[in-house]
Length: 158
Picture 1 (cartoon, rainbow, N blue to C red):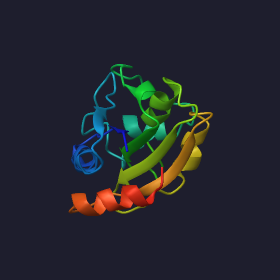
Picture 2: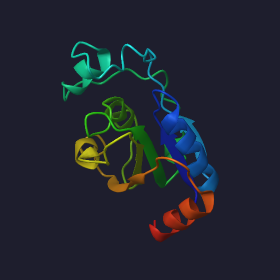
Picture 3: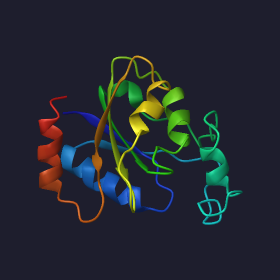
Picture 4: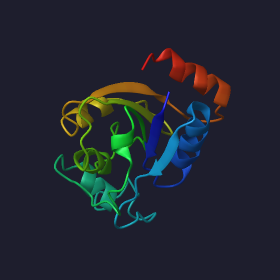
């Protein structure tokens, strides 16, 4: 399987998971970076006025990307990773999806979280990637085993 593993990581946790997944599936790694990096104050979900809180309260929020150079066109399968924020994907994932044409591609979601699952992430992302098939993948928390992840990816029958 030739796959792209694209991910957004605010604190490094999702980046670690993405690297293990990319090694497991032999995929190319691409980091989705915001034009303005998030600070720890921006990520304070207890502060209703923090940047992440404000973005997540607005369905139309589209934080700017640092670049739009992901090699999406070269792949039919994209593993898309993110930390779960407020039970869904951060809105920068919508920005990423809207920056490219994903028609005919399969997007497999993976995420990291301290306490929640993928929730309604797929539903919140589908409108940003018309023509793509978006499927819930799995949570990649804790110790990750490359062999187990490779077997999981193969079972997806992509």
